[in-house]
Image 1 (cartoon, helix red, strand yellow):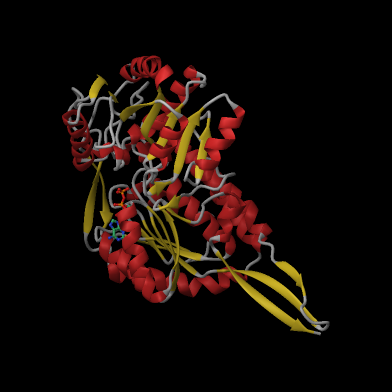
Image 2: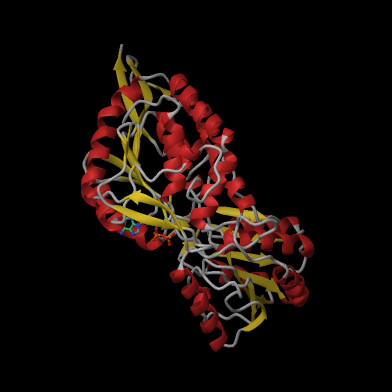
Length: 483
Ligand code: ADP
């Protein structure tokens, strides 16, 4: 094997279906974006296999739900502990298949595991409610019950954590799951499956089915009447497809979609903190996250100083294979990602933007791109409307708070907004006015299992994490009792 793992059995290309590992009749190749070399041959399963996985999940669901929450909590806790007993192997697999620097991969493993820990705890706290009756003999009781079989579709940019934070609440409540990971990064998902199997989880409770037929498998999950709910993290484009396709069976939907986050630096900001925040919010995962700052608005009084400080830090970021020491920016996921970054920069330049640093492919070639700062951005540019999903920090100059808020909210997206200000009344005003699901105030890092993650507008539906997150996997049943 090319990866030097402590536990080589964590690297598998076999699907997990009904408690068995399925190598598949057909396979596809997963490659390392840093080197272009092959990592594994992965089972290329399609609609028929996914349907079998859903059948298995359906058969397993009632017995799984009949267990106590405490019992499910014990199994999830065991899974968490197994993940955290193997962080280095899981991080190596993650970096190898998607390119992020190893320290970021380690952080993702811990982040994913934190959701497993949280929902293991929450499994014991799925509380209902009692409501005073509307007649002297009546009592009203609200039960919370698992929605049933959940279909999950996950992306490549956080191949461990995006799946972990869907599996954990599903299993905690007594739901079962059929998951389809991104065809670009199935290995992190399958490794999670291997560890889940070691917890003694019953066959069929968790099924992980990789395959190249993304559209067909998505359609199957949406149309299959045995699937009660779809949980998806990915693009707004695909989110809309799933919503349309789910209409016929009235699927419950949780959607974490595109972001295009605004990042606003006011004149009264702590400038060094704002620079740190921008580095974290923009360049983590080489800019390939839905919570990435995509539009950086800087008030004119601090604009030039901010750009100068940021550009100096960006120019110093080390680009290279994420497995090497000291690397801050790995390769982009594939050629399409590289082409989009180049297109966005060319478009911005043609509309008058200036390159403060970077701007071109990196000398390493492949899909490596130099971290870039652009200034002189305007509303006419593509970056103003589309997520770049790359290491490009575009700067707008603004004069007034009103102008900044209009720019920030003038989008169909509303996942997260960041701003830096030391004026308490402005902090409240801006936080309340931003049309987003999450606000980072004087920070560029907001994600934790303790807080609800999710967006408004076309950035999605529902929330993941926190005590709000578990509600997504529960139905409300109202009992009316006559004494
Ligand atoms: P990204 O821009 O992050 O790649 P996508 O929405 O394209 O976002 O991908 C997220 C996940 O959705 C991936 O697992 C991908 O394979 C899957 N996917 C892509 N197209 C479809 C589709 N038509 N139906 C269902 N899933 C899809």
